[in-house]
Image (cartoon, rainbow, N blue to C red; front, side):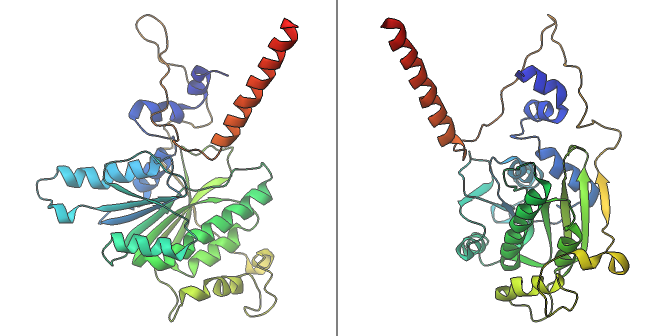
Length: 316
């Protein structure tokens, strides 16, 4: 399958390259903003699991660049955007990069220092594990990543703030919803138009951060475990099974983006130039240090070894 074939069958992949986005996922955040207006009044943002940087690009274009170009904005009033990831990524104007672990308390301290002791207005997270195709496994690993994100959120998000995170829908989605409702008065699971229908991904849009009275960040996991138990205190199996039947939880679910717009699961004709050919564009910014880099180097070395062996056998 060549580049042109992928451009044809994934309209958002093609549009991302044409509009200068590092990944098609930029459209997901844009469509969430269209529906929920999440950037209104925002001055301090944290992007978790940011690499390769498409969501940080959206934050830069929607918040930092308009403020920079405005004649009414002073240098000290420019929005602050902090992007966190274990992997480095190419620079983005107006984005401060922190190479760190979102499960580490020191990372939260670094963020707050960048904000001069203040806290974030919104935290976004488009992180996801390498999927296996086993939905139960993928959903569990993704939920653990979300809870890691929630852990840092409890340290760096101000009261009334927002948290946007990728989720994988599955049998325990109601449990995750109830856990998030402990900390946010409004929680909606949204499916952007640019997210493929064939994908189990959606996004938790959590608004108005209001932790329980007397909440201590160190007690986060103990508090979350209580949601998974009918008794609330014992039998901490962290299962959502008891949330079915008479206890069934109905989760607000919303499709967002122009529903009459591009279909992410459809193949579209390729636009042709005057000479009848199609010009395929390269990705805007490939990852500069992908986690699979070592695997590619080993594969390349292995292939070269096989080629050298063939040359030796031919010459002999």
